Length: 279
Ligand SMILES: [Fe+2]
Ligand SMILES: [Fe+2]
Image 1 (cartoon, rainbow, N blue to C red):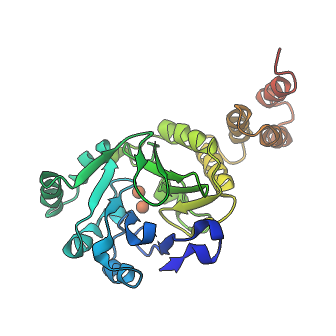
Image 2 (image 1 turned 180 degrees about the vertical axis):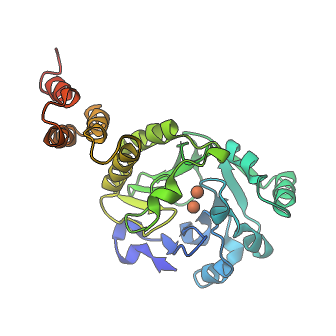
């Protein structure tokens, strides 16, 4: 477990348990009271015990339903009895996991331990944690934003820059309701937040310039849709950024589109609109 506060003072008290194999990264906050995702790794409880008694764990927040974020709950509930937070849509997909998990979640529900989160909710804890409903990877994705430090826990919607299979792991899972259009809308929404640090579900935390990593993920999404050699991904990015997010960035994207295709009418149209916004 690594203390991110050792790298950046704003992240004091946030710990990262590195992802490994079919297991997501897990984040420990609030002095061991809060986990974001549960991973899928035997030994997580021992890692937490190195920091605080496991009995102090009060809540686990699931960013989405995938097993690499959920499987570690089995070990956690042998040692502690936290509340389990998730979007209501995620609850339905959890039943896709094979036995004994449907019974496991049904028992938690019966005991009143499952709490549902929706867009705009604020979670208890030492730091204000805002909930953003951000479907796209699955239909029930949520991101957690801590405005005090500009920190976003992004689940699998935005992954760390260093993950070798980032685009594969973050793509829409249609079986669980993931949709490309939702993914684009959610990424656009996240670009409007003042994200400095990013805590992704896979890959290393992005300590500074988390906003840039969201932008890269959106551009890569447009490249998958429209092709890497086409001006279209840059035009699409310019449209997003010109919508009150980053005018200089929008101009840069238009110029890149024009480098690929000097007569790109869409890029010229966006540049014209930026330069004469009243017309
Ligand atoms: Fe994942
Ligand atoms: Fe996932």
